[in-house]
Length: 248
Image (cartoon, rainbow, N blue to C red; front, side):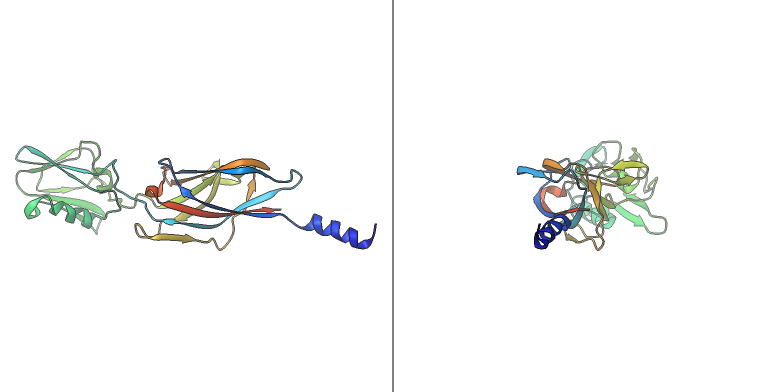
């Protein structure tokens, strides 16, 4: 065989395969995004491949108030009343200001105590706040399930308005990640540092390569969760990712 032919074969064998996948879609309510390919994706069984995240784009729709906790229950002189909030990310001051649109004369005010991180709720005579009912914001404000009936009420715990502190991206085609002492399929994780609704443009400076589990697949499943393993669905807005599969 001529030298040039040997060189061609050697070059072909040395040339490592690299594929890029552009993924765009919307997650379901479970924070899942499934992509099905028109044809099977096949890789050589004799080689190993790394899969890495090159880019992620989305919006920081990480609410601390949803349909699960968006009702404020109170009463005046025995008459029950409610205020219903829209889904969003609220701090204590904003939450209190919105209440003033429904409850006159600052009859109920909510304040963050910056010295200890707890919450105070002040009420005028005749008012009560009911935190025993479901769908209230009591956990975020740091209160146990109880009825508040004092002029001044201090929360049982510190306020926690940052419901989502970290976002984990999972991918079913990989392995090699650990969450505490449990093996997982986490592709990448990042901190929640953007204001509510602002764009997220993530391009990891250092790729985190993960072994590709299957050398042949028809689909891939991506899911998003927070540090408490709760689903993140980005409130129905689109997300996009660039994935790289590279031969080792």
